[in-house]
Amino acid sequence: MWRHCLITILLIFLTGCLGGGGVAPTRYYLIDPVDYSSSNILAVRPLKIEIIDLQIPQYLERFHIATRSSETQLDFSESHQWGENLRKNLLRTMSRNLSKLLSTVDIGTPLNRSSSQPDYRIQIHIDQFELDVDNTIKLIARWQISDLQTGSLGVFNADLISQEVIEEKDYDQIVIVMRELFGKLGLRISETILEQEN
Image (tube, rainbow, N blue to C red; front, top):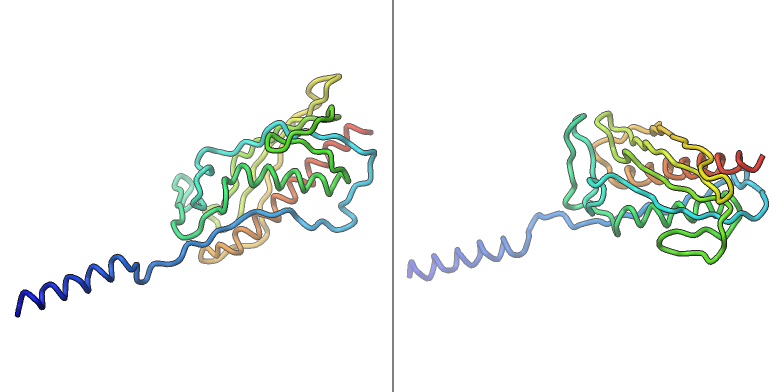
């Protein structure tokens, strides 16, 4: 009799472990293109743009969303993850953001090559892009613009910090604010491209 009770208890225990009772479901996120206002849409001659590359730090290549718990320590969420490789997501989104801002459909990327000869080539390096220890989102980036005739036209940088303070690691808000900051980076990049046109 006691053996039967012991087996029953063990089965109940194993069922609880395997059933994952109390485990939060995994949620998946993407950074989508921004809906810019009409004042941000910059009317220029039809430009052909090539984004040569967009690089992010290796620690952001993980699917688990990264946040900082101190200046030197990162946390990775098990239950909040990117829906795809973050670098590819950002590359595709930057292409669509620049397409809106520069009123052009001719934007090539490593993911979507264009057969056109580009007017400008862009290389983007993101050095930091996550929730920082002060509960704001920081986006630190630099980019280089070049053309076929003169080569490098300049290296530019942006240190963007969200106005919003995110409480208790609200991942919905984290991703929304990351999208807004990434949209601002696209605006900065488009402005530096147009400076070359003047």
